[in-house]
Image 1 (cartoon, rainbow, N blue to C red):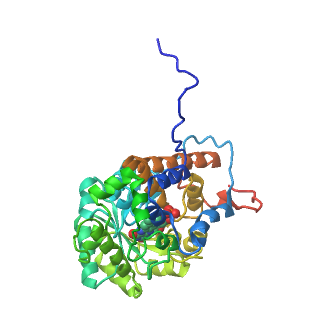
Image 2: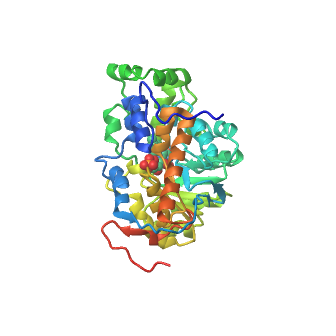
Length: 407
Ligand SMILES: Cc1cc2nc3c(=O)[nH]c(=O)nc-3n(C[C@H](O)[C@H](O)[C@H](O)COP(=O)(O)O)c2cc1C
């Protein structure tokens, strides 16, 4: 006889309730020392761009259509020819090992378990070979194309030979954004440790243990550019952060990008496009895609919100290139809005770092699954069959009047 399930569960403590991305954010904040937290969660100067990335979603409301009877919506899509189970990829983030020592390896493995891809940063905590060796699928590689052309060519060659086929070139770092929170908490140049900061780190014993034992802090991918000597622990970390200063690309120009385009045989995307004219230029020089991004509000404060910049970019390039977008995606309805405005897929940065800090690899899968569930629910309630079907007719300005007569 089947056991009857009890209708109410009694527990001494309710435990941590991790229902949405913001819950993971709060839990991650508790688990990380302040120095690391401000690095992960902070933004440039007055945080106007950072906050704008979130608040701009409220400019649109979703127009639902009822009684369609479609059943469960299909979330699948492709980006650069790569099939994905949902239109969400993991953006490149540097120094992931600071939040969880297995950083890039854990994120890449979680991405493939969740049916998507990880974009490995040039400033990763694990090398491109280590990540390739720990995963089955080909992930994407993000390059800061600084240094001599020989160095850039060698980094590209190394990524290609390791099996990376999609190259993302980040171009919104002509100088380093001023993240004042980081500087105040000692993550400036050079990093400043005070007795309190050391004690504060020790208040996070699990983090401190992993930090000391594994020392997965620095950016070995940069060492591929021949810039960072393979020193150990904090020494390597400081060297890597110094190197990040030099990675900034004040003289980078379209000629450099064209030069890279000629050398890279696979699909190539430019990340950090906000101006429709730049998107057209990217298409003209043979890019396969653009990523509309203000670097998560970490570079130019008062930059337009990514979601606000998206429609003009889509209108300018049409079907010539794939348009992705990142910055502030925390809800399924955010993703729905980006798809409706013409993005092929969205990317997330901080949300998966929260997942890493809270539950490691599993935490990243959990975060992606939350977004998957929310997107599925949002599409079902909107009355569409698939993520690819949603279009601008499903959005209305927040205070606008819905047009009638959609087919
Ligand atoms: C801690 C951190 C490190 C980052 N490092 C890189 C990087 O190495 N390369 C890069 O192209 N973008 C980097 N970014 C920007 C992200 O790729 C992405 O554009 C941004 O995080 C998206 O916003 P979101 O965090 O609100 O999702 C970083 C972002 C964060 C939060």
